View 1 (tube, rainbow, N blue to C red):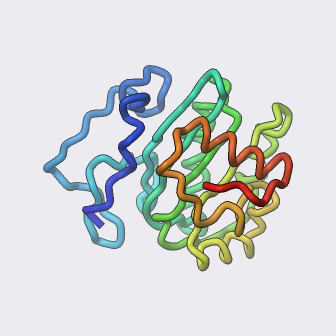
View 2 (view 1 turned 60 degrees about the vertical axis):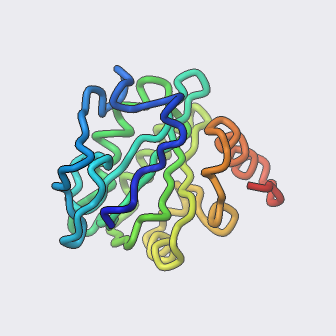
Length: 194
C-alpha cells in the first residue's frame, strides 16, 4: 500500500498545501518517512489525515470559480465504528462549502471497505448543497463497497452506481471531468465517453 500515491498530474494547476483556503494549507510532507497506516500497512506520506484513523485523502483539485472539489480517498471507510463521514463532513466539507464549493467528486477506487451506520451526515451534506443545486458523486467504487453503501441508503443523497464506475478520470482535465459528471447527474446522459 505504500506504493499507492495520490494522483499528482494536476499539481501544476493546484496543490492543496499551497492553497491558503484549503483545510490542508501549510502542510509539509516527507517522501521518506512513512508514519500513517491502514490495516498495519504503511501508506504513502503524501496522503492527508483528516480525523479518521482508517481513511485518508488528498484534495486533488479545487476550483473556486467553478465551485467544485475533487478528492481522492484511500483506506477503510468506517462510519459504524469511526464515524468517518462525520470527520469528512466537519473537517473538510464544512470548510469548503462556505467558500462556494457545491460540487464534490470523491474518487473511491482505493476505498477498500465500507462499514455503514446511518445516513444522517450524508443527508445533511445533501441538504447543504441542494439549495444551490450542488451535488456529491462517488467515482469508481468497488462492487462490495457500493453494495454496502446502498444497504445504508447513501444513494439517496450521493450519486453513485454503474454510470459512475469504471471512469477513466485520470486522462481528463478537472473541469472536463466535472462537466461530464454533471451531465450524467443533471441530464441523465448515459453515453459519455470518459
